[in-house]
Image (cartoon, rainbow, N blue to C red; front, side, top):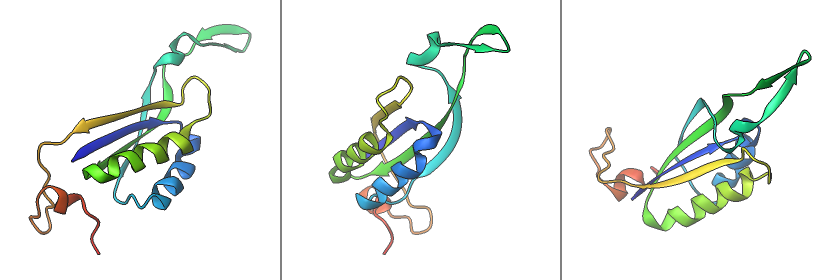
Length: 116
């Protein structure tokens, strides 16, 4: 099992959700976050003054998947979220030690499998 954490541009969220649906990836959490990465050196002019922009609005997706869904999930996000510009985001794939579905007590892969 893996936890996929993706940080994407807010304007790409709908495209990413549609790509995940087409890839049959279900169950995710979405958070609005702020951060900076490769675009930290970007400066903008605001009312005639040059300002270094520090934080940017982003969307954080967290998706728990079984091993067979790792590659389809990552590929769906990569394809849908990419603009080719600095600030497109990152995808992290993290190992998961244990998962429990609270409602049923199911564990591990059974806990991340969509309910029929």
